[in-house]
Image 1: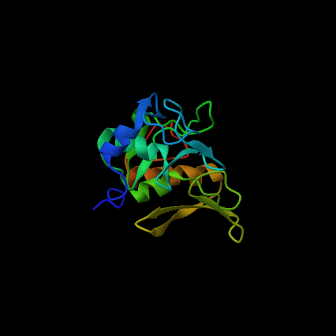
Image 2: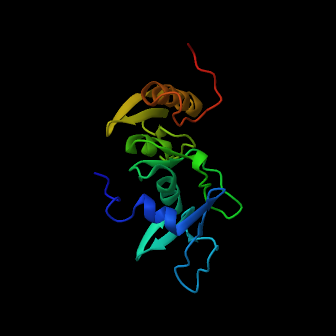
Length: 179
């Protein structure tokens, strides 16, 4: 059972909002401060998301947009492109939203591991080498030691493509794959 379904429904969202170009507008005015037809919600710093309050609960606009179109809010909801709009938030156009697994969403994020500029790479001072690693099923996998940072990053990319598929998040997205 979806944990959100008992709190808000598809019909409520359809009644409350109008959708235009990735943005939700009030179809029913919830208060004097939010008149009919005005943009719903506000950007919450430091995040890059628009948040809308309904019945004393905050919802991300992208969750409500997905619910508006598909009638459910998946656990793993992701923005395909992280490019920001002129408002400084991620685009909530329905074409830019997708349902993905929690593990894949974590793989998308770039964590800073010491000195490296790349995902899945850190520097091992004792060996004077760059180490490549990847995480799969909550376990870290050692991918080898490399003389340069870029080679380690490419090893990570190969691991990611093999384990997460064609649309995985890699360091060199335009690099041609070896067949």
